[in-house]
Amino acid sequence: MKYPDLEALLRSEPEARQYYDQLPQYVRDQISTRVTGVNSFESLKDYAENLTRGDG
Figure 1 (tube, helix red, strand yellow):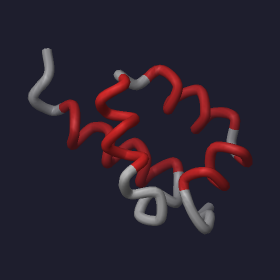
Figure 2 (cartoon, helix red, strand yellow; figure 1 turned 45 degrees about the horizontal axis):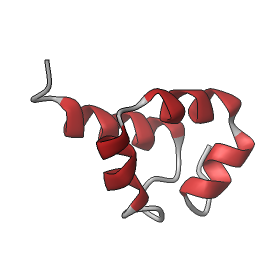
Figure 3 (tube, one colour; figure 1 turned 180 degrees about the vertical axis):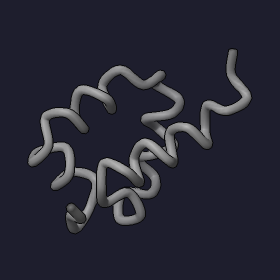
């Protein structure tokens, strides 16, 4: 399901909120700069994975 923005997604989907809350702070900071581009749990996961691909 798509939402208008990141905040609506996090309010509406507890699983997305839990995933977001477990991300490193720098990833959350990057995602928060693109709130309208992250509008589904899938897009949240994709963007987070892209940001963390070089970690570890």
